[in-house]
Length: 130
Image 1: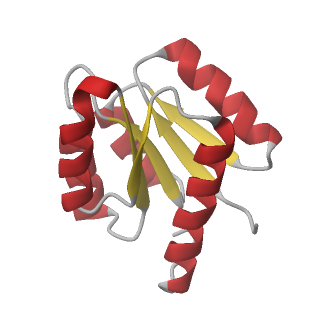
Image 2: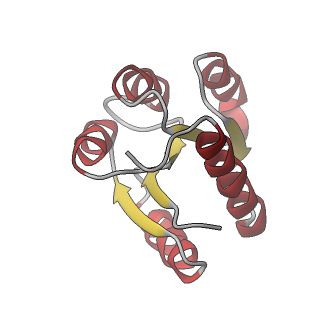
C-alpha cells in the first residue's frame, strides 16, 4: 500500500493512543484528535486519506463532524466507529457519505483492511492525499 495518512478521532485517549501505535507499526502516518473541532483543524493543515471517526463524542458528535468533513474535504474517506447502541447513527453516517463503519472495539486486521479499501477507493477516484 502506498503511503496512507489516517486521522483517528475519538475522545477515549487510551484507545486512540493504542490504535495509533498499532497503525503506525503497520506503516501508516497517523494523526489523532480527541474531538470533532480538532479533527477539522488537523484536516485543514495536513493531507489525510482516511478518517477513523467515533460516532459518540462530547460536543460535536461523529455525525456532525462527518457532515463538516464532507463539506470541506469531500474526497477524504471516513470510517465510522460505533458501539452496539449507536449502530443506527453509523448507518446514518453512511447515508451522509461515510465509507463504512465498524463496531468498537474493532479487530486490528478488520480496521487495517477497511483503511486500505477506503484509500484504494479514494485513489481510484483520482485523489491522492490532498
